[in-house]
Amino acid sequence: MKAAVLSAAKTPMTVEEVRLDRPGPREVRVRLAASGLCHSDYHVIAGDLPSRFPAILGHEPAGIVEEIGAQVTRFKRGDHVAGCASAFCGHCGNCVQGFIQRCMQKPVRGQEDRPSHLLGDTPVLVRTLAAFGEEILVHENALAKLPKEIPLDRACILGCALVTGVGAVTRRAQVRAGSSVAVIGAGGVGLSVIQGARLAGAARIIAVDISAQRLEQARKFGATDTVPGGDDAAKAVVELSRGGVDHVFEVIGLAKTIQQGARMLGSGGTLTIVGIPPAGTQLALGGLGELLFKEARIQWSLMGSSPFTVDIPKLANLYLKGKLELDAMISQRLPLADINKGFDSMLSGQGARNVVVFDEVLKQAARAA
Image: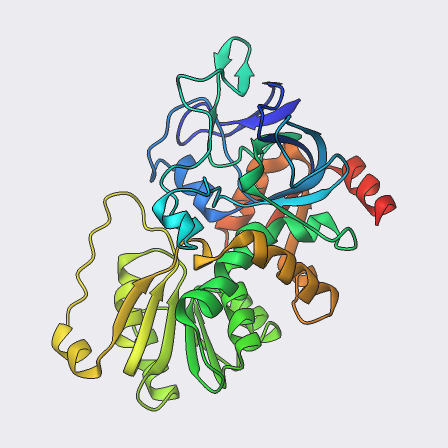
């Protein structure tokens, strides 16, 4: 199969012929129809997160099951599925308590196992799902089944952007109807947070971003107000909300914007950090006395704190009922050969989500719907 391989940090990916192993007992091989580009992958490309090389990135896939291992019972050939980076073992302490996103024994092939991907004779590192290729080979606990009616070039973003953003609102922060919310960053995950806040019945949703284009788009997804990002953003949010908001969601992963988020909180407010900071980031909040007397709370949300095998099908059905917007989140559809251009476009701050598509598989999926 063809896959986009990253040979070193700070270099472009190249499309190479990669050999994929046969599925193990609980593994599933999926022919991809689409794969979303996420800023988390760019952290590896930029060298902000350490990695071994060569590597295949990507963790927002959707496609059609081609082959299953001997012990797989949840899927069959022809099923439409989306992947999620929250692969889980199902038996560790976190999993049995329902916190599958915290699983510390993820079911993946280790360095001592037979390589799942080979570039010539060289093993290729699988980063999360290795979804920047024509196929993926993953444990069944990295997949969720989809209704066949949902187009797979929209469904691919459910497994990260949507489940992370909506889950942060509904699962982790548990935003109540009538609440006030500020969202720092209006890219793909930020727009998903905004949609989650809208679905939860938030009365006021303030989008914060340095891009005027993204702020305009945020209103179409449910933001009631917008504030330009920058040094005065916290003050503007506090003034708009007359004392601070009930919930702040930081989806960028920068110490500076996390600090701003803490200053946006009203009494009893909660800051939920969704963005992934670069490795080694240090955080000094400052003004801790003020946060104390507000009884403010600061928490993290990993992958939406979501049981994704339950939530991804729910989100798909919300889309099919017209209650969740996915169509307008797709800014650009690209062939695999143009994947580096897709990341360049993402970094320019334009649009919400770029998606690599495989047209023949999309057509096959549409015929099955």
